[in-house]
Length: 334
Image (cartoon, rainbow, N blue to C red; front, side):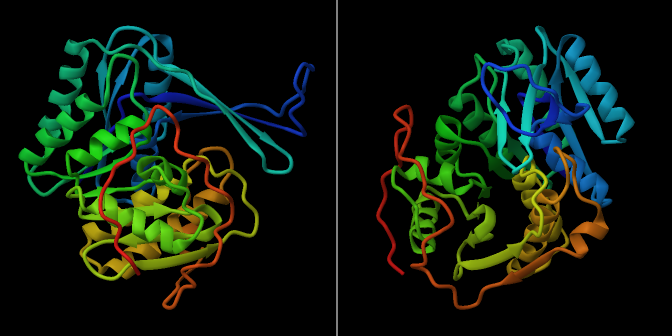
């Protein structure tokens, strides 16, 4: 079983328009409204492929009711925990040239009682040997120390923990030593406090994260594919997407594909290939939809056995944000 916990789920509303122009009245295509949140996306992808999975999430107010209805219609296995406040709505604007603008609301404040109720449901659903996926942003009043505590409780419960978050939450999660973390390049750059403009730099940064006790670091690199850094040699994969319809949720599907593969006991190279196929197929899917098994099977992905470690990656990495304290460890040379 793969069980996700999404502490800040959302209704994802996607609008397509020719061009975003500030200060003007714009006409959009009909909205697409889907259940959202990174952990929800992971379970949606797993369920679409027949992988045993469960999403645990708090829901609140009318938006929470709509979120529950959409999940039921999609036949996504869930355990919903009613909390106070209102669940959030995130809006994605997609322009004709593929430019994506996201407007993410903060979500409801979870009280200490709300948070404990959600964690109780999570731990009640998990058995020793199950995967627990902690994904996405944290709602107001929940911080990285809360997330680290959940990781430690799930680990003590016998679960294998995977984390996909960012900023201070990711930093706190790394300190709690989950089995896997899955940052993208920008999130990893913020975590170590350095630009990561080459594959060599990405691998060295992932090794620094592993020195905190994380077993594997799966880094999504967008158009440059992905790299898996673990106890053995780094494994590099590449992918080609003819037409990117929406990158929203592609990283979630990449993580879902990886966990689906390792849950079957396949080797790390095959797991990275499967992860890439799910992520690439998701990028070719409109809005925040998850790909079908047919789409993932036909994705153009491959392993790169002798990668050029010093080739510049597709885009510059932003500097370390001021609210994040970089982790400081010895850098391993390649």
